[in-house]
Length: 176
Image (cartoon, rainbow, N blue to C red; front, side, top):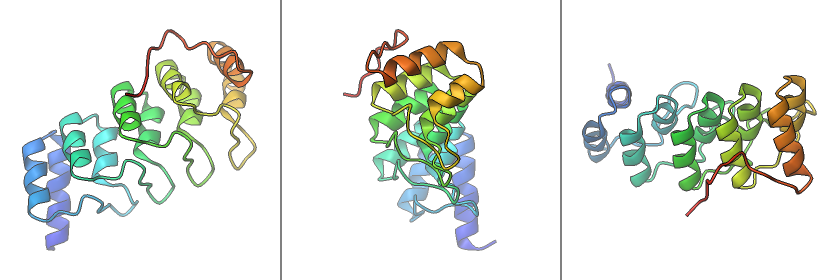
């Protein structure tokens, strides 16, 4: 096993166990936090996806890029929105994640939060200005997705937002 592969394996183990001390030791020994796997997925994206928040905090405190994309254009925020990980979404947004950044198909975090029916994630994304009328490469947007998937509550919320009558679903989410 090469040195880089061993460090990557050690990093994945630190993420899997949410071992902040181990991650910090790896960083101090020279593990480049922007290294990625064969799909371009960084340690931060792995940690966000797996809800390993102690490791997320260490990575962000040591300069991990919250807006980095994998080879398909997925960001940590997109993974959080797709999976309905509200804590991860909050951390990403408070760390400067761009809610408008789409993947290679133009799908945004809001698009995926709507598609998967994650109301709290949709609320948070709308609260920071995510645009429900932003189109992807196939001509769909979050509003169209909510209609196609028959998510009536989300459709009403997105229509209200798109028309300027935005009423969040009780969300008090605000960036500091």
